Amino acid sequence: RKEVEQDPGPFNVPEGATVAFNCTYSNSASQSFFWYRQDCRKEPKLLMSVYSSGNEDGRFTAQLNRASQYISLLIRDSKLSDSATYLCVVFPTSGGSYIPTFGRGTSLIVHP
Amino acid sequence: EPEVTQTPSHQVTQMGQEVILRCVPISNHLYFYWYRQILGQKVEFLVSFYNNEISEKSEIFDDQFSVERPDGSNFTLKIRSTKLEDSAMYFCASSGDRANTGELFFGEGSRLTVL
Image 1 (cartoon, each protein chain N blue to C red):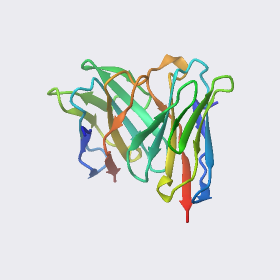
Image 2: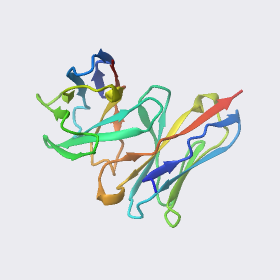
Image 3: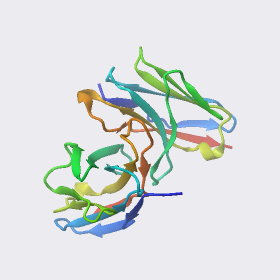
């Protein structure tokens, strides 16, 4: 099983739609979770951290399910500008590495 | 807003040549990283650096790679003898804390093309 796994998509949704992405991780001892956003040929940028109790930032909601070892990102009222790749970041991964490990990302395309 | 800067933005080189990619992390940050991303693939960890030494490295970071912090501001990645498969975007990142407590700040990347 891959350390951090994401459905690559693409998710193709109309403006205003609600879309959700999941990310699974293999190490039950993982402590820290993040969602990053990456625009085409640009650097990743932090979108939000994921806290145990779940957290919300405007139209974005992140949740953690430790029992099933996944995190999720919900985007409400999608905008054209939300089109990007969303990267799940987890650590530590197996072996106790203190390096953030990236999933391969889920591509979102929001169309008019 | 402080930022991580990388040079060059794009470098084209012949196979077998040495390449040095440069990064200036955010000035009060303590942890430095190099990641790479082959076109269409995931962001892969290469090496982390703390307190003037490598703290972790991946299997990708073999003897062809080295890192240095020569002058307290620059953080460089050297590829000694480039291969075709080294063609990728190389991202430098820094963080003020161990990355489990905070954000990784990435530079805009250096695109390396090996011919």
